[in-house]
Length: 335
Image (cartoon, rainbow, N blue to C red; front, side, top):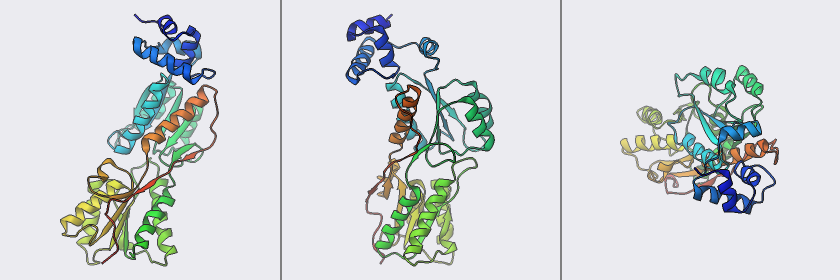
């Protein structure tokens, strides 16, 4: 069986340096760290997390709390989290709330409080006062990905700003009748994101001197099928169709496009559609969108927490990540 002594001989450093390099601790040159990791990989050496934990007082595991594992954004963030943790020889412990009907109290009251992890990343969640108290009692460094949360650092995008930019893009094309497709998600999730995206639409409309019609505000719950039904109801009504739809997520935008096509309307000839997020299927739908990078957000959260755990640096502020406009031809001037 390969041991730490074998890795030390192969990389030409001491066993103490191997231990520090594989645990992501400071005061190890990056070239040395890479050499040690390559040697460990070549030899098939797997450090003992239990032994390292006894030496450092840490579990060498990080927790990630997700509302569910069924949505692309969550899995993309988890890919970034896992990539960074593996590079630091850390384990990932996943706490899945299970979506609607999930046992949230099981996660917060028991699993997290067992202190099986050194830090915690929460995805798109808000916390009750009691949950905040429980998190504080663990002493876990905590980070939220996917929207700001009161009193907890977060990594995300400027949701209101990007929604305003998407709406302004439609206005600049000449659209004045623009429907908004958004809405709150499940109880306990971060409601600031959907609220901010709706506020960005309203702000852009107001700045252009355009009124907001109640029948142009649709609720899609960040879900393709729910969004399709919401647009169906609008198109089947007496108000006629808008010339453009701004959807608060790509999944909702795709639901809107399915409804428009089913009603014999062409995108963008009859109705322009634009979304936010950068869903992998946006390319298949030829959907224009403002694209973010969830994996890089997850990776950044891990790097910040590892810096804090290893004493390299303490990140006290939240971090805002950029988006980029991807034009795939789903918007055009109104006819």
